[in-house]
Length: 114
Image (cartoon, rainbow, N blue to C red; front, side, top):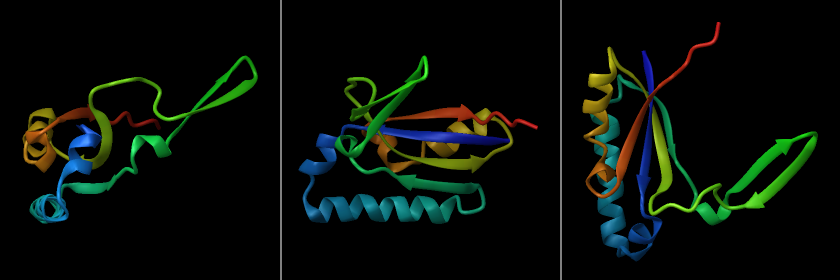
């Protein structure tokens, strides 16, 4: 079964890190990717929230606003799509994502439409 691992952290924490500390965290993500290369089906980091747009299409009208749809302490920073036998295995993988130490990882089963 496939699971989406949504990575949340505080953007301000990342921007306050030195270049060496950012590189160190990047290296941890590379190591995570190698450790779980058989399980990972895809994934990416996301640009900061100020680059986002939120789209609503209600009653035939499209409304576009800047930024994310909600004010939160943590922002969605990236994701992995993984293959796991069950949610417990997906949670175990999520716990090894480097930013789980600073933020949170949401584990969501993927719905398959056929």
